[in-house]
Amino acid sequence: MKDIRRFERRNMPEQEVRQARLSHSDSGKLQMRLEAPLIQRFSKPSATTHYPEGVTLWFYDEEQQLRTYLHANKAVTYDDRNIMHGTDSVTVIDYTNGDTVYLEDLVWRQNDDVIFSNHPVMAVNGGRVTYGDGFSSDANMTHLRITRQRGVIEFNEEN
Image (tube, rainbow, N blue to C red; front, side, top):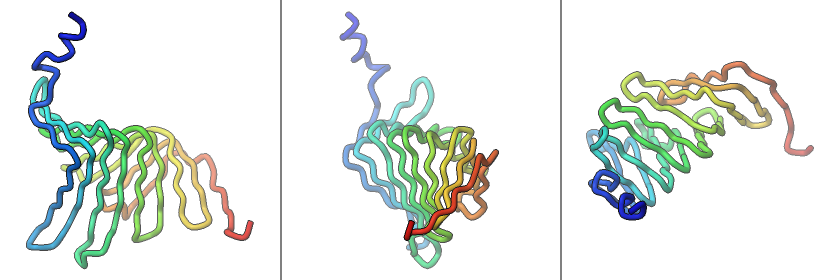
């Protein structure tokens, strides 16, 4: 019976897409690309979209230049609240200023235009590595702030 319950209708996604590649544009200009090996949509108990095998997002600026890259090994989007929660080795790269941020998890509140985490973070920018207890930024990653910094390590490529 345990195995049968696993396949009950309420546990199954209503929609499932494999090897997904999606693009979002506005007025013919590419704004975002998404790739995921598996996307599952559920409506019960609440409207959610799951990325159980990971998701990768690329964000572009007005000139169609790659601005930000985001990857999470797992993610869930709460569709009715426009919130994405990425977990399990999240990486964010800001190509504008060269920051690469490594996180345990990440919350993106799209309506508030904010990305944040309350878990340990490591940020790399050129020859600097910064550790902290969390971070926050706007969705464009232009105002990145590491909370409770634990230290900055400076290094150069020669060493």
